Image 1 (cartoon, helix red, strand yellow):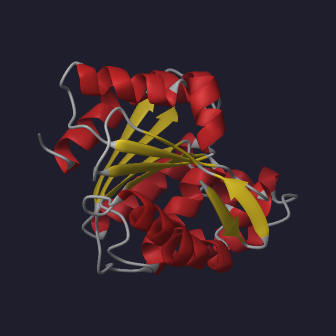
Image 2 (image 1 turned 30 degrees about the vertical axis):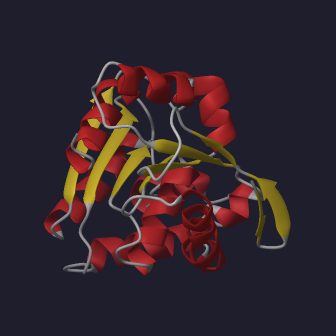
Length: 227
């Protein structure tokens, strides 16, 4: 399906094994996740062996990734108010979706969940770019570094949140991002989120993210969407 997102037409491929209303997994960088991490092949295998209930996958392209996925209020508002309602109208979704993303795509999903409570049932965040100057000053040349740092600091400082959903994080144990992922996991857990970080053997790439889907995404989906 084609959607208008912040002035850009994007083609969203929506995958499922069956028709009718189903739970939804929405993936930032969706086409890349499918091409380079075999996301829909993973989904089909998990469903067919009975590890998770049948669900639908929306492969959301990134558009202007550095702008959209960098804690952008405009993007979060559009995701909540335009993209997800359009998917619900088109496919008759069951319940709130689970969001997944990697790097900046993970950051953007957490930003949307914080701004719009009760939008997501759970989040699966891989190698999230949760920049803090203590660990990530080398990223300061990134065009939206300051905006990301302000958002991450705000999350760390808040004592609670009205919608503390289940969050599974994965990150390569040797990645630069592992330090800020540890701090973010601790902050979310302290606010009542079911936040767990799995430090894995992969790195900051689709090979590593693919290898962490099983069992960590499977476990999350099975908990949120019981058969």
